[in-house]
Image (cartoon, rainbow over all chains, first blue to last red; front, top):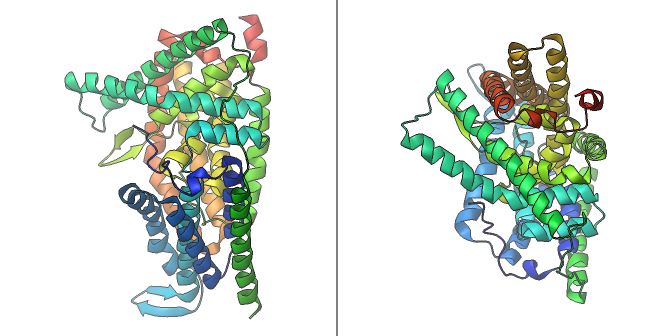
Length: 252
Length: 211
């Protein structure tokens, strides 16, 4: 149900996960600081370049892009009209200001650039891979364990929820906005929680019986190869270029 | 309730990340290794539950459930919500790396606040009616506070986002009531079926030692 369509063999998928997490963080932080349109365009170009290296499947990619841009649509509906600034275009009492238009454009460019970078660098990892990469990057132990346990169970629980909903629908349950609907959904949710509590208890006992000491051991070995370092340095160089453009634009 | 990446200013993002790190550290400290599996599976249940679409009036909205997580987990709700958000970012690209801190803060702080409110109401009104009232307050407050904090994050970023923030707040008013009702029914269901789940975390240590 929650398959990861982006985790498939590609140039980026073969790079070291730790370096990918570091690169994605650097990229996201650098892009968050941008305030000029030209550097944002360059950032978007960099994101698209990374995406090309990750060879994403087209349909899921379009769906993800659509989801983020739907949120940005809300901003486009309000921000150009309400931001104070010099009026560009007037229609009755509605005024589009240049500052508002610029803010909307800037936000859209940055959002899409970050999304592309994230899809290329992080979404190409499987959940355990990301968990272990985070662990090697000195994320707190407990947090990584929590992440791995949660990631392991979402598929099972989603399946369980589907079964519960099917059973309810077979008994003639139609969701409406009524107290009955809310009570039914809440009971199903409660049942899911109670069952998952039971499942957690059984899992814990089973793991303890098999000698679980509180540490996950990963059989995957991470190794940084020269090509990984080259890729990372290249990405940093591109980021430097984007930031340099930002500086130049801010000066002029 | 997610803010997309690239919208907020670096100052707001930095503050969000710092607060989220602090909240997660507190939450993790209150969490024993023994409880990790339990909390992990519950986080997964919340992850799945928050994908459920509920009819609200003529439209439909998805559940947020941060109030319910808070009521059940206390401070441990913070890491639990952070992990669920990271999974959402990874699997659906709702939000991303830089806004993770802000999103975890808005929902996590609201969840922890609903836990305190739930406990206070519980203490004022013992009994089944009190439990229902406390759970309703917890669930409604979770969404309300998360919406307010999200709106604040938008408004602090730029003057121009104020209208969008207002729109966001009004849109969440009906969701607040529905979320309160769902939390109320879910908690009273759990209280009938498996009451020990309501005392899962060590947060209320004095109460636990008495019972």
